[in-house]
Image 1 (tube, rainbow, N blue to C red):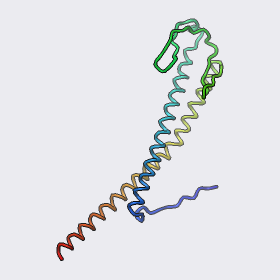
Image 2: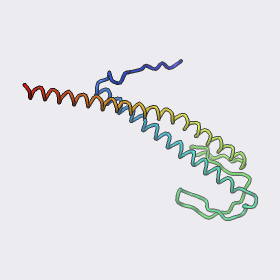
Image 3: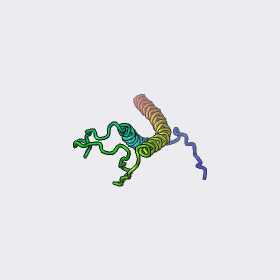
Image 4: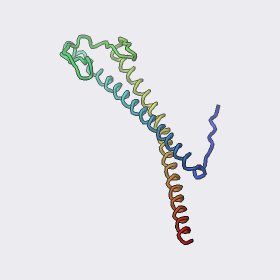
Length: 159
């Protein structure tokens, strides 16, 4: 089903409606910015994981490493197997894969995040431009109201 867009002349909307539209657009831009930040964060983690896999070489087998237990706690360990890795596939599930399979998995995840970011960015830019247009119209209307009030005051003073 094709989406039909209806054009609305912002100058025809009263200030309260414009203000409500501005607030709605601000909320939508905030949500899209948050989504974009989360996608970038996830993409960065997948890129880090992909980069870490480059350390799995035969000549590194048996070498000392630091194993992360949390984001800030590491314990010493030894790299005992450079052919297979356990990867976190989400929601607490881990899968054993060869290093090459793991690299492919992380490449797919990076590509997926990139494509999603490319989908979010135009929508966010469009909403931001629309918000700017609404704010410009609101400013014009405020200035017109102010001029009208000043004109009415000068007429009252003359009377």
